[in-house]
Length: 144
Image (cartoon, rainbow, N blue to C red; front, side, top):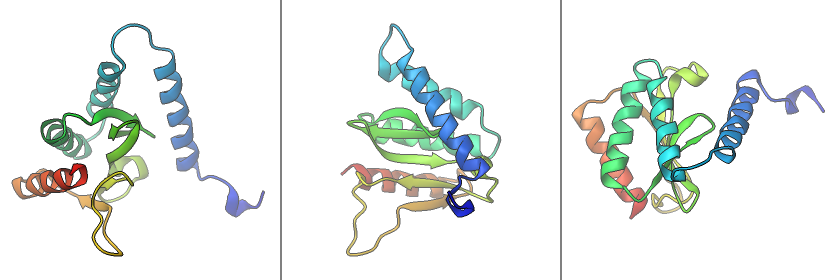
């Protein structure tokens, strides 16, 4: 394997984290899977540093209100929301990759299509009312 084909330390950690998530989910007993997954998301958000924590909490509130049919789950350590097991939207926290902003991301099941090219990732730097409004609009469109 060439050096270019190797995973970075961050990517390797993400793979390990995803494996741990799947192992944790498989080893649970009792209670509903949806409630346990929701608790995992809340614990993930609680463990984030600011401003990621506030932004992830705002996104969680919006998704829970606007799209209660989406199932919260963790996805490579990100708070995510899925329909029929497929992630629709997730928040990639800045602190995970030491970037200057976190991103609100939409996966393929999201209904954001607009012609031949459209954005699927949005930088989020605050929880201001205008940001919350835009997140709400995007989530509504994604689940339409």
